[in-house]
Amino acid sequence: MNLIALALSAILSNTPPANDDATIRLTVTAARYWPAATSIRITDLNSGEVLTRQLSAAEASELRGVTLSPGRYRIAISAPRLASVFRDVSVAPRASIDLGELALLTLPQIRGVVRDAEGAPLAGAEVHAGSSEATTDANGRFMLEPGVGQWPAFAIISARGRGTRVVDVPKSSADSELPAVTLARSAKLRVTLITRPAGELSAVLQVKTPAEQLAVVRRARIDAAKNFVEFDELGSGAYVLLIRGEQPLQQFATKIILGTGDTRTHDVTIHPLPFSARVSMGSAPMPHTEIALHNVELEWHADLTTDDNGQIAGELWQPGEYTAEYRGSNGASAFRQAVTLGGMTPLKIDLAQREVRGQLLDGDGFPVAGARVFLRTDTDDNSTTVRTQSAQDGTFAFEAVAAGTQHVTVLADGYLIPDEVRFVLAPSDTRHEVPIRLESGMLRTLRVSDAAGHPPLAAEVVAVSNGVVRGASYVDPEGRARIPLPDDKAVIFILGRDGSFAALRPSNDDVMRVNLPAPESSLRISTRTTLSQPLPGVAMLIAYEGDVLPLDVASRFESAHGSLRTDRNGDLTLRNLPAGTYQFWPYANELEAESILASSVPAPIQVNVKAGENAIVVEFQARP
Image (cartoon, rainbow, N blue to C red; front, side, top):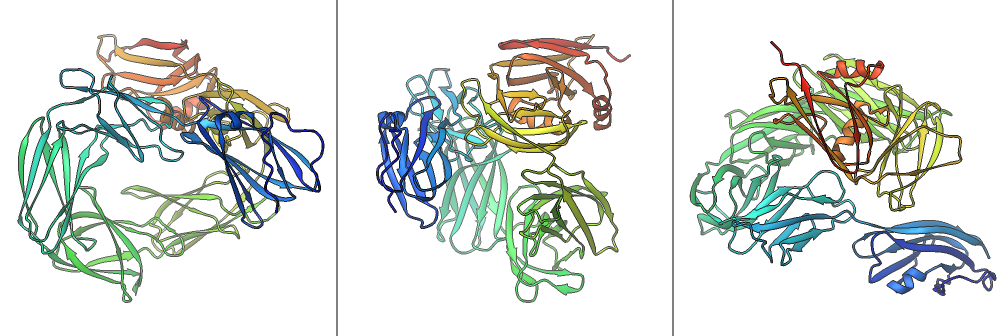
């Protein structure tokens, strides 16, 4: 194989290459800046041979193609701090193939500022968010660029001699500015084990974030000869300390509250108890079965596996209320059971002897593999949802399904979303078959770009007909999306991770080109009674440029823009909006929302959102 001759000239010659070599034309672009170094990696998909070439910024910007011998290749372009892009290509002798533009997309950034207790900028503070890290500059500013698929849930900010703080990161994978962080005087904590199990132990200190997430801020080992552990440079907050041994249920957690500058001592007493359990399905023991136990109050979990006889034995450090979860052996499992640990009798977990099985076939009767299949089970006590993936023959299975109302939904690339399959499993039922046919619909190709002309990274595309989502897809790294439509009256919604948003009707064009407007606006709706009292918890339906978002699409919208329900102050704040006309309908429950969606009720709230900040106050008649 001849992988040499990377053509770095500004324009390749139109003269065919020597021998059987083919010319692959391409152009590399970068969204925000040209990196100092770019890598081009060419993999022969037949032999596995790889050629990698490092390019300078000038070489990358001037790259117009490569010369390859006949075969199947993957051409990948990557650069630090940018999302990589690749194209697969089959090369015939002396061919000339145009791959077009390969765009290195800018990764979304997380920015913020850190201050001391007096409000002055704090330089040198360390910021960690997942695998990303940064140090604040002289103005207390920092910037993080998480990698693709590595968007963090929170950021941990620390500085020598000051209390560590943890802040939640918005869920949307888009450029975000975090609230200003103040690092005040640090607190200290000493935990003493009044009675302790033998051996070396580990300690994990976690703090609750404002969004009720548990974030690990410190880890420590407790040697066998020691009975205490100390932590310093802690911020104020509600903490959970977890002490662990070697066995799965050798775990003990305790809650601790710290104030700014506290020096706190906390005593822990652990009384180990013998633990045993038996797992069965019907009367038959379940050997080598995976069971997870989740502590309800303190949120830790243990993974256990039964022995040859379907039994589990060990030591328990923390009695209390738990949830048992079966992991499934031949299919996904919907099994959940509330259990109490710490009693004198062995724990008995009897798995439901019920299963839901089915097969996905296309319109021609061929199996559909790799589709996502969801099962929601509604009982008198709760509702659980699990998912699996269809096998090569289109089959899927759910094990240990609880009796109750079942809902099966399917998402398969290139196919319309079928109607939900709903049925009831009685306690006496053991098996239910769900054959599902998938239809291709009218396949449409979109070419999507953002306000800067670049492909929007992993933007979601959904097709809605009669208020129901019937098609779903994503924009690929080249800006293309293929989505099935049920009819030519469907509405296509495009939701970018950065908040860019569009609604459009299908056209007869071979390729529908869509330019997403810039998400440069925000809107605050303050709801008040005529007596000027705030109205918390008011839910709103929303329409953009006259197209109403069904509840399913609205939930996707909320992840990038904010909640469509007023907060405790009666305010609804939406960020990263494109300018345009928005309409809102308050509703009390899902049934009322569906009634509004099915009718032509005029919107009581309409706002012409312009670039920048927008705010309105809406008054509701106070009840007598």
